Length: 154
Image (cartoon, rainbow, N blue to C red):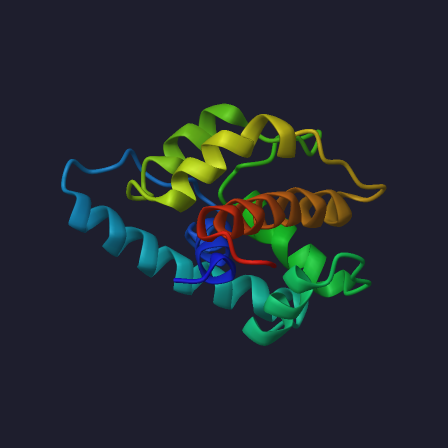
């Protein structure tokens, strides 16, 4: 799976009512089912609120200096519905720990954990910009790590 798709899964995995994920079940196959179901519901809800499409969000992630405010606010919507952001717009580390427990062991999970401290420092002028910079940081670092592992130019 490409880093963009995995990153989108990371962003979108929360239910549409804005409630945090329940404690993870012991069955790993059930975790993925919960993640997938919540991803689809929440992505649909946030895309309706912010008039975005999957193609638009992928384009947003590829653009280092995007001016797509709806796309940036879509990312904030997703993070807020997971309660991954606190009232001040910073990452809520307690909620992130629960969230990450739904993601299977993978290079992606390792990358998120490795880059959490650095990416948590990202800030924008407006809350939607902060969400964009945060997610873009994870995306960029994962992409660089993936390229380095393959020794392929980006």
